[in-house]
Every structure is written in structure tokens, then in C-alpha cells.
Image (spheres, rainbow over the protein chains, first blue to last red):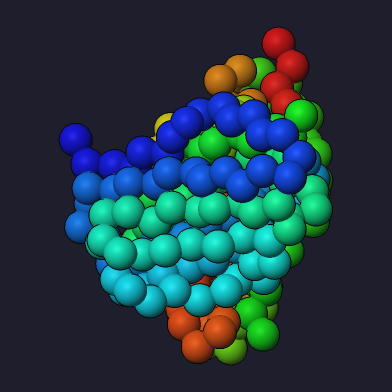
Length: 112
Length: 115
């Protein structure tokens, strides 16, 4: 079945380390998105990509980086510059905005 | 700019009672509207969507929503709530941001269900 796979489900990072969250989709969707979710703050857009080899900053891109070398993959790197990285991260994809987004099951990142 | 407001942060209902979650949007033309549900620790699942036609749309899990242009609303309803409906619910509208059309989400409404 087609879908979006986020891995790992839980991730622990020491302060000062970079960490990469994986997002893979086999839906043949062109657009992919990364969101951060904190309790009581809804969804905040980090980065998005409408097509391979192109991506744009969202509302809270500072301290994050992405790449889009393949249509299926949109990894997110949380760098040491991100001051408060502990959060739940969601990846989504879309073929046509009127169909909405398909979401992955998320990665919970904890800084220890 | 387009926006979505979900006025209720938390709602508690008894199992078997009816449910209505409110959503108001700001958009100039006919909007594309969505409702998503998120169980704890999970991703978001699409419940239903509206972009034209009949203003009452049916979704999965027994949910429905009604688009009211005059009130700029797209409220989600269910006649009889089950304990498994306890989750967070997000309303969204397609909006133009950064030169691209994207989903703009409300802040969410957390639903608790009493037995």
C-alpha cells in the first residue's frame, strides 16, 4: 500500500549534535512538507518542497535544513543551531492541493 | 491572508452525545476546506473535504461537515460520539503563502469523551 514512512518513531539527541529525520513516500507525490508540533501550538511549517531539487523555508526554518534529491525522499536535519528541538515532527505529501495532504505517523525527537 | 480559527481548544462530551466542532475561515473566494483527526502520537488522518457542490459533506468514521458561506464556517458534526473519537481535530483551508498554495491549519480542538 502507498503511504509515507517516517523513521525513527522516537529519537534522542544530545545537545550540540545534528540529527536527521527520514521521510519517504511511495505515492508519487510532487510536494512534500515538514511540520513541527508542540503541545497547544498546532502545526508549524518548517520547510516544503514542490518539486525535486527545490525547496522553500516555511515559518520556522531557523536551525533546520532539508534536501530533495529524489522525489520519494525529503529528509529533515535538525542542527545544533535549533535552540529547542524537542518536539513531534510530521512529514506530509501532496499530489494536488485540492486533495489535501497525506501525513506520516511522525517522529518524536527528545534532546537529552 | 487566509486564516482558520477553531474557537474551542478543549471540548468534553459524554459517550453517545452529539458533537459539533467549530471552524471559521478567512478567504475571499470559494475555499477548499478540510477536517483532519490526530490520535495521540500519530499523524493526521483526513476526515472529509469540501471544494464545491453540496454544502453538507460526509466523511469517514460517521462525521459530517456543513459549509456555510454566509457565516464563513465549516463545522464538524457527529450524531453520537464513541470513546474512540477522543483525539485532536484540525480544520484547514487552502491558502496562498510564499507564492504557493498550501494548507493553512487551525490550532486544533482536543476532544475528550466521558464514558
